[in-house]
Length: 431
Ligand code: ATP
Ligand code: MG
Image (tube, rainbow, N blue to C red):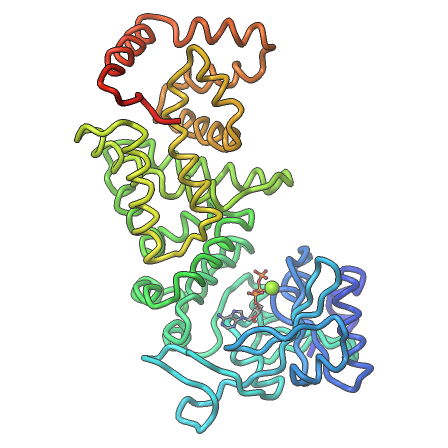
């Protein structure tokens, strides 16, 4: 135990809502601790993302203390205490008994499918993933309780799983992703004994529900360290378990631009997060899946499809294949496919079409995507520059630009080709 004067946690850095929850539980006669990432980040002098509370009160007892409380979860019953938009998650101490016990814990092929046995705080500590995630800040005396050597690992910058690494990864393969995520986020090293099995066990991620992997992927790439996380995932052979088609297309090394494109996309995401700008999973997935989509669309083009039809078919096939691993909700996969489908429309720079594209609800995201493609060297930067300028200039100048169109012979050739296709009865590119 580290007593109050010997650690740097100050209540001033804990959210008011979390403090309220801790005090109310304590005053109702229960144990109440801040636990997990909140304590870890406070001890590192970082701002926690959220605050989790652990208690010996059962979920029903927690509900008895708070009016603004909802019980959630089937696999784990948890209490959510709502304060406006902030939610404080309160979990009852759980144990991780030997699976041979009569307990409530079920293992399926070594994978944990249900554990809902309440336990003591020591037991609760030992079922957690990493030692640095198993520290408790006790509101009763403001001390930090450390059952697993987390304080030392925190100081040394080491991620160490509790218990036997391979067993812990088999129980829950997502812990491999968490190891990589925390290593990138905190700049920690994964202890060698915990690192080694990752190279062997990545395929276990195939057994994790696709909806859970979607949530994990958001945490991996939307935490401000996407680029580093992406590189580490590839280093540990985990990226290919999440995005097999992308990994496959990146490993063809004919060109530099596919990997440059993803790297730039990740760096860009990190920058936006640092600047407080919004990032959407639609754009993120559009970047991650672009290379396989682009290749597939090229194949269909070669087989005689129109650019729009080729991209739409490639997009829908990609979503289908990817959803076997990671399920992307429709509200993200639809805009993602729009970003892809809009790309070929940037080629049309004359007449009314560029004006119309500008008013498309997905224009901004599609244009950002176009910039990335240009930066990565996939397309001529002149095209991206034209569109940047087209947005910046006034209406008169814009009309002038659209009159000139793409300019040069290249533009004229394209326009002629389009006119020739019209009599076939098929509009060149549906709108
Ligand atoms: P952050 O919220 O900053 O991403 P965190 O460590 O708080 O990191 P959460 O997912 O919020 O991560 O989980 C809270 C705590 O629950 C963890 O610190 C850990 O103690 C425990 N935990 C979470 N997921 C697992 C898991 N898969 N296996 C074991 N323990 C876990
Ligand atoms: Mg957390």
